[in-house]
Length: 338
Image 1 (cartoon, rainbow, N blue to C red):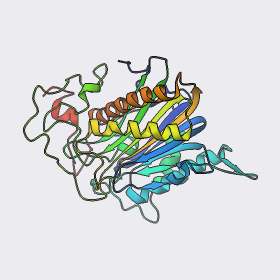
Image 2 (cartoon, helix red, strand yellow; image 1 turned 60 degrees about the vertical axis):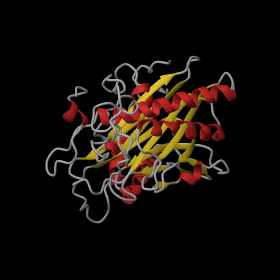
Image 3 (cartoon, rainbow, N blue to C red; image 1 turned 90 degrees about the horizontal axis):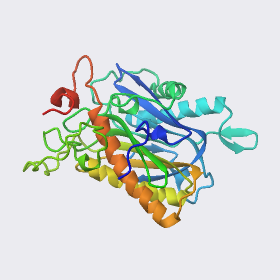
């Protein structure tokens, strides 16, 4: 089974950087993915209540075949302002889709709901997400923190603090695939009330505790548990690869990688969440075979997504101050010890 790439982050895909910014009082934040060059992209939406911006630009029939960044944000619909901050940053650098002498940065975005987590949402005349996104762009680099940061800062699950996770791997032919996940799941990422992760079969190098799967599943573990109501839950994922894929192939990659949500979250793809997977490619490596190569990449991509989701919860820390909010995984299980 392929091992994680060097950083075990989505930025193991060459040419990518990730930036995070958040506000502790707001209990919300923004994560951006930027590329050294425009990226081919596609999207797969499975949740019943998504919140997105510019995803129509990713449809196969669209005229714009590249994106200049991706944005994940808290704030629910108020957070959709974040992509404007990314556009402002990119426009200052002269980047964007050319329309005559103008340049229009294409920055698809998805948001998660974190308005009821106890943070101060009285932001005044306008929400702060545009400024947070700009700051995230300024902070973008290949090494970045996981857990309670960026778009995952205000995220929660049914029983534990959610967060931002990432993971990566390489295929046998050296193609890299990575995932970035902001986990604000409607369900559980751990099995019942124990320390074991649903994604345990796909773990590499003890990246989320190395506990493996439980010997037996508690009787109530497979009874679905739901956090909040409609529109309050979402897991946002970006899958990236250095394989040269066109938009239709990227769409298939997003569909296959979305399987990773079902491997890591129970339940997933519900009518009361807004689960979204973006897939991007910087087109540096040719697949040895377009059919079997993509099948291999998508299968591995689903595993990487599952790992990124588990890492998001494993690396999260609880909110500081009042109200305290949900406990973090480390608080309950001391880094994996029940």
